[in-house]
Image (cartoon, rainbow, N blue to C red; front, side, top):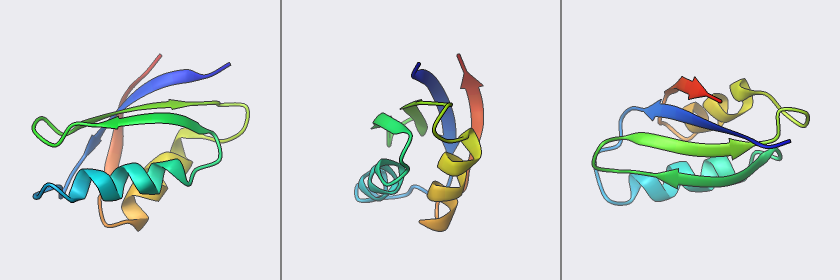
Length: 74
């Protein structure tokens, strides 16, 4: 069952940054949807915990140059 999570993403300082973060998250097999908010920086991620871990998502953003940490997973 998919679970929503909220991540705080750092280093986003231009309008292209959220696109890069979204693309990095979409490459994670378990991620089914993302919503990146440039203005306030939280990123909403829906993922299947049976297929991957939260760490896979945070690693994906970090590898793209945007470190993140989990704010909340429901």
